[in-house]
Length: 628
Image (cartoon, rainbow, N blue to C red; front, side, top):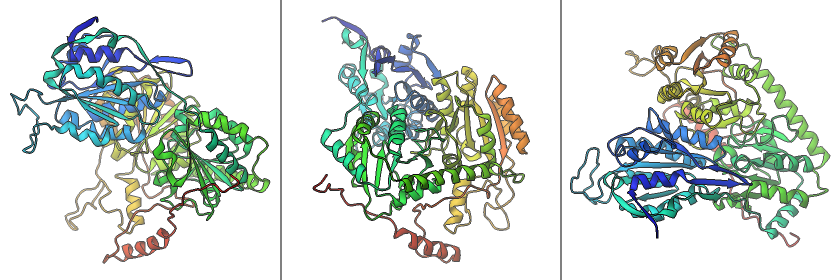
């Protein structure tokens, strides 16, 4: 057998360079390169192997967490058909990646993490940055990646790569199991040489499958739909990852069944499609939430049915409601005691549509859908047309951005009050135009992920919408965008603190405690003094970006025109009124409130909570009747 005598680091990089994926006849190289920061646990071994591989680009990020977010944004924009390797030193470099790993795994986005680790031979322990344990020598901080990784392995001997790396690729390319994959790499082992089989480094193509639904269950699902009077579809991120938008549009047009979209699924249908009722759940529109409340059948497609989508299990109040779960992941297909169609979203819809030939929802339901849709478009126009302040309302700034952004452009967001407003208000025209990370709602994701989105398709304009608190947490990847020549248009919404949590705090009777960026008040001893004068334009300029401050709506509109014409990353800072937010519509979210308190406002909030929580439901197993 022909072998190659190379180091573990060299073998790892050589393998990664030759992994390809194929779907629907289209083939591409899977890994786009590596992102990271070299430290003493990775600069030798893997670092040296990368230095010897100029055809496998290395990108220097400014924070390891930011590096993983770049990779996550990139892989999501590439519909999981391409990914990055993220690497770090041992110790703090590695643990900085844990939040990014959790973000990728929650959202089921493929990212490969190569974390430097302590010495396998142990004789020089404790090495720099090693966290010792008195209970075991077979442990390091990299074990903390286990709960947030879809696959985890530690490579004690170079030859272990031969069996580990195929498992890495199996998980990364799995539609159902993908997420963060972590390899802990002891720094001494990285530099060790071994004989590796030559075929390990040959081109390998991984097929991304489209599982078909089981015929018996497909027939039952079709029968359930035919019997339903008020069915509704919930479209999740799985619709987009399956590239099922066209199939969904045909299904909805043929049957008249309306659709509500989750944060991850927004853009599954164009906003103006007749059956698109818009956002559903806690941050949903009135029509989608009323339709969900009255539905006798819910068809959940590619969604995790998280609490924001189900309004903490209060969204579906019809006593006879049943669920059909179309999903590649068993854990999601069975949720809400659904009839599980374990299948690719596009494959399932293409099979279901002909099964329902001749079926269409009743005229009265179709009329209600049209009225709900028209009513929400009018409400969106009203919010966009507000002339509040200064400071401006967040809704009217979003409206100004929506006018400036073209159909091919992308907006990126993740945390704070913006996701709720965007979920309701943003008029998405294309499946990939709305990039929201809300599975983990990770502050600091926005700018880094925006860079990843831009790297995925440099021809598209990328607008990053970020709150001031999230900007302060992780804005350093602006430097990386300048370094690599990838232009971002960043809009910072400055409401002097944590706007979303501040409003939530008020709703639970706590008056926004601990959510403002203010000086400590010597009179009260609390953080309720004057606003802190943070100058975001100077911060942006210090990173090398162009910075613009806007006060009026006209300022915002002019700045957006300037940003689109600019060739480098530009940051627009807009002060918005923290107390002027877009409200909720026909929905509720379970945030437990203190059962006992001396505060009257908390007591009142608790009474409202107790009245609302009784609507939470437990759904029985949907057993087909004899006619099914």
